[in-house]
Image (cartoon, rainbow, N blue to C red; front, side, top):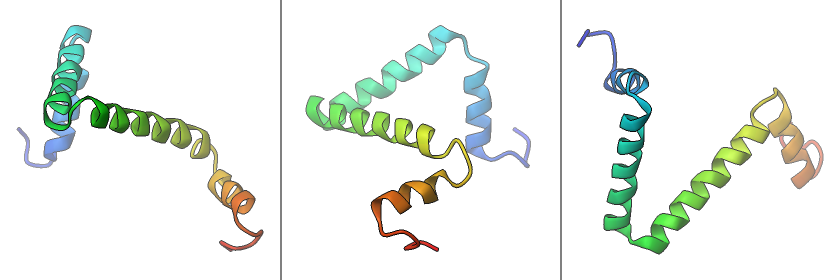
Length: 81
């Protein structure tokens, strides 16, 4: 492994080169570990929050200034300026 690459960069490159079956096996392994460690309800809770975070991130961070616009809707205008 080259010295200039971090561990996470190397792992992400290795995952990119896997087949879809290999990626599915890794996902199934991680899901199985979560179920064993946390149980069904806590794992579902983590997965639901992950999905919500993904959707919020997708909608809010796709264009510049959208987070500020969103915060202006929640808080008084100019609160974060």
